[in-house]
Image 1 (tube, protein in one colour):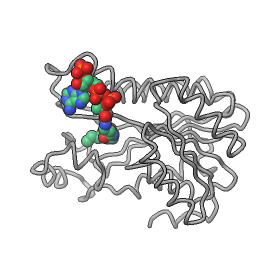
Image 2 (cartoon, helix red, strand yellow):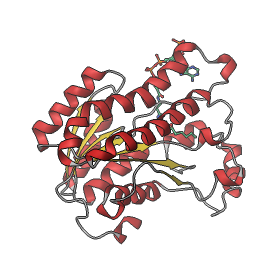
Image 3 (cartoon, protein in one colour):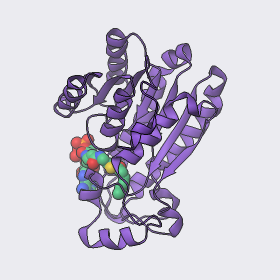
Image 4 (cartoon, protein in one colour):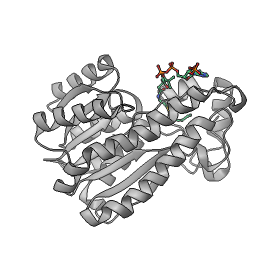
Length: 261
Ligand code: HXC
C-alpha cells in the first residue's frame, strides 16, 4: 500500500465531497482520503453503490456518509452539498470523479449519447464546483478533477469522453486562475490504464490488453493505489503551491503513443 509513505493523519480535519466515490478509481480515492484523516461524503446517482462503500470506511474507523445525487442536475448537487455541511460542518476538498463511458464510433453516436457523457463528466464537474464555491472560499479549499489522457491523441470510439475530458482540463486551468485569488487550488489527475477498474474490464477489449501493457514504458498497468497516492499528495499541504496542473499518472503510456482503446 503505497499510501503508507504519508504521515498519519495528513488530511485530518478536512471534509471531502467526492462524486463517483462509491466505486472504481474515485472509490479508492475516497477511501484513501478517509484513511488519511478526512471525513468523506460519497456522492453519486446510485445509493446502492455508495452505502457499502461508506459502511466499509466507517467500519475501519473513518468518517463517511452516502448521499445520492445526479451531478447533471444542479438542484440535486446543491441538496447533497447542504447535507454534507449539515453532517460534517464544512467542505474543503472537492473530488470530481463521476463519469460516464461507453464505446461507440462517432458516426454511430447519437446526439443524446454525446450529450449524456458531456453532461455527466463536464457539466457535472462545473455543477459541483459551482455549488461548493462558497464553502471552498470560506475554507481556502481545493478541487481535484479526475480527467483522462484519451484526448491527447485521437482515440477511436471515445469522441464523447475525449471531448468531455478536454473540457474538464480547460475548466481545471480556468478555475485555477479565477479562484486562485481565494486561496483555492484546482488540479486534476489523468489516470492511464488502471487495472481492476470497470473502465478497463468493460472498455478495453481483452486481446488489446497485452499489447497495451507492452507499450507502457514502466511495463505494468496502473493500480488504483497509484491514483490514491497522487490524490492524497495533491490534497495535502505538500502541494500547497500546485495549482492548475493536470497530473498524468500513466507510467508514461500516452507519451509512448499508445492509445487506450
Ligand atoms: C451507444 C449509448 C450507449 C452505448 C448509452 N448510449 N450507452 N450509445 N453505445 N453503449 C446512449 C443512449 O442510446 C442514449 O442516447 C444516451 O446514450 C443516454 O443513455 P441512457 O442509458 O438513457 O443514459 P443514462 O441512464 O443516463 O446512462 C448514461 C451512461 C451511464 C453514460 C450510459 O450509464 C454510464 O456511463 N455508465 C457507466 C459508468 C462508468 O463506467 N463510469 C466509469 C467510466 S471510466 P439516445 O439517443 O438513444 O437517447 C472512464 C475512464 C476512461 O471514464 C478510460 C477509458 C479506457
